[in-house]
Image (cartoon, rainbow, N blue to C red; front, side):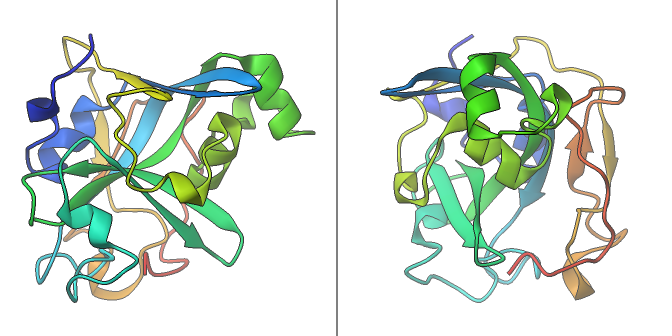
Length: 201
């Protein structure tokens, strides 16, 4: 179903599992690619979540997180990769859900060209790969995911899911205190878990 904006205006930890099984689509001049989400991570905001970009407050980089739910927060990481998030909660609350992995269900030939040499399983298996497969650039940050060139359809009934520590979040923002990584067991689009490799910041 196509959700109303109110669907996203909830705690990111509650929203995360509801995005499992959702299909996000992006249209470009090359065509459309759609990915069924199988893994996400929730991040809260100012003073609540040491792993969040918004933990220390608003900056030019994270200002989209403080805006309306259902918008795209894209950021650059490792000096080379774009990662995509869905803004959650009410304006001012600075929460988002990172799209960690999924399976291409439409536009697979285009996704293969964008991710040359990758197996079909790996086309969108991991946050940077997912962004490349969809063809979403950093400049799309702030875009409304409920209008073209995006489309986001969610399931009417949530899928069974598993939860655990977030991937690659070091220090106080990782570990058992923040079991906010959610995934669908057995889905091929779930990425390999890497413990405390790097801070989300």
